[in-house]
Figure 1 (cartoon, rainbow over the protein chains, first blue to last red):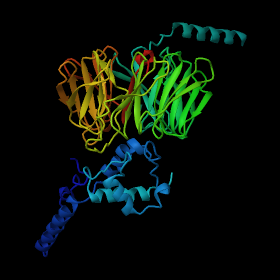
Figure 2: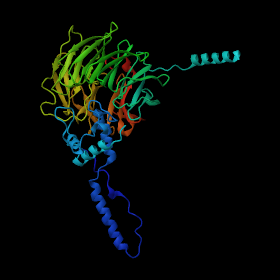
Figure 3: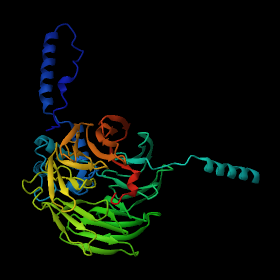
Figure 4: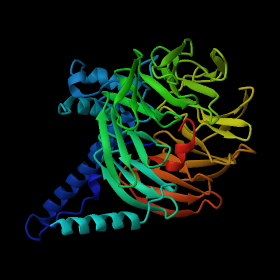
Length: 127
Length: 381
């Protein structure tokens, strides 16, 4: 199953070229390496906002509309959703709503991704 | 001065007379859903000819053609109804007729264009010439599965109330026949090419419901009442489309809801004759016009793949990945080639249906529906 978080990796960035020789060179090199390692480890769990935005507008949009104004599924614009907490929306995304057409997305996305989507929906500018 | 005007007029007349006439029989339009434009294409040349812009929100858009294959009526998600002249390559009229629309149809005589709406729920009918509204039919429900039927009729179904209505415009003001108890949450519907059988797929319960439009008083006929999401409730990530429901010999094939399979149904008895396991949840199951092959695309996240099923053996004979987000499949009228829109590749791909060889890639911006003008002469399209 496709996950949306694992594509970007900070570890693929090129090395900073300021690794100048001289006093402290070794220390700086070690520090740089440490930062790179840390970045990579963090990046593995970092979400890919572009992929998630695409998911929201294209795939959620197949029921809720490309611009999220609603379709077979309800309007998802921020002014409509503002009465809901992000936690509630995250739960709906992950587990769906029984007896409606809203499916659980848990098989396809992670909890972090669902939470990102919930916050993204709430933060959308009013249109 | 008079001389000049005369000369100009003569020149104009001559230009008109000598201009190459535009034949539209092998043209088509591709919806560019993100940009709100349509791309005019030529199926013989396998080429894009022009882009026509300014059609509003075209996510989930569709269109129908006038009987002379000159005008397209484009139904946008934002309620926009746009009349496009594919000869002059211009928008000739546009109305925003509702807040949220889902599709449309044109009457058999080409005089009326109907649009089904989610908000406000119902159907609105327009004069095909002027786009003036001639009838407003509120249904108190999101309205889906709108098709034309012979005899200047439109048939449509209500997601919320599970009713199907037949609006008969033969005598001017519509006479409406209401059929209740079609089932819970019908999500789409289609009419067979001969205009006799109307079938809705159900989301809220198992099976499908058919109507015999040749009957004096059509009654709901349950089809596959034991088949559906019910056995093991499956999440559905994209509602299947039934437009592509196609006759292959004496059978229909249709996408299952939720399950990874297509179903084969005897067209006379409306009983199941087989199932074919597929790669994912099918969205469109489109038969090649001769009925020999069925091409299937799939819901997210398996929407990069197409499978081709042989309608005699019911086995998958070919599988390939045209690219990310395959949204629609349209055959040339005699089926020798197929056009496939690949949204996230920003391309329409053209394939030979015998050899499966890719013949052409055509640039398009987030392409979705592909509509060739030959649809003008088919009931239900």
